[in-house]
Amino acid sequence: MAAEATAEIQDGKADVNGVRYHYLLARGGGQTVVLLHGWGSTSFMWRFVTPQLVARGYTVLVPDLRGLGDTTKPVTGYEKTVIAGRELEYLKWFHNSEAVNSRAFTNEAEETYARAYGMPGALRAGFEYYRAFPNDVKANQEFAKRKLTMPVLGIGGSGSFGPVIGNHLRHVANNVEAINVEGSGHWVAEEQPAAVTDALIKFLPPAR
Image 1 (cartoon, rainbow, N blue to C red):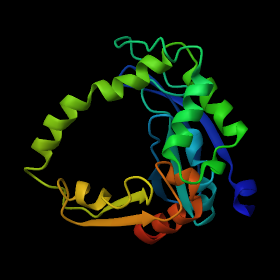
Image 2: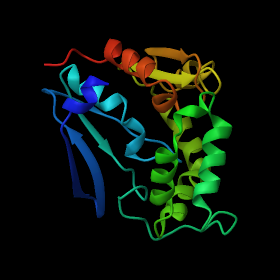
Image 3: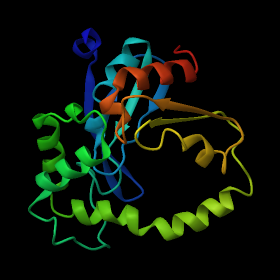
Image 4: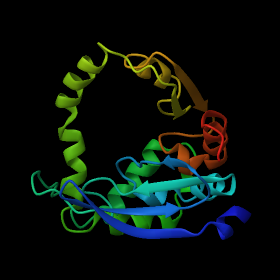
């Protein structure tokens, strides 16, 4: 993509509430968009979408979440011994089993994620997100009592959460737009980056 070559990306770190976060920052204009990755990924997952947003005048901030990528790892948690030392094999299985367009996961992408999740403490930190599910249920029940009023966009792949993402979000938000991306599974930003970029451009305030 032509925009990929023109986007200048700053690679930095910042201390926030005792955690040293790694982030990528691409400056394109006054309107800032923050892109967050999910489990099994890092900030690397937004590599196709970021330059397209920058080319349209947005500034894009992409952090590695707490405990993942090059962000520092929490101390509490637990390890998975069926996985430690086999991060590449595990993540390949995980990415392919949840993807429709599995060709999106090149060897470079898989090796990048395997290095990130192979760092000391990374698997333990990643699994902490799943350990938090019971608390998430309680928190979401409280959130549902006072729903969000701002516009909320949900993007999901047709082979994953796409058909139901709108219904899930409407439990906690009133003004929901849901996009079901064909030809994608769980990893929409990598499997169908053009569709994700198009949905974001239509949803976001105009770049200034």
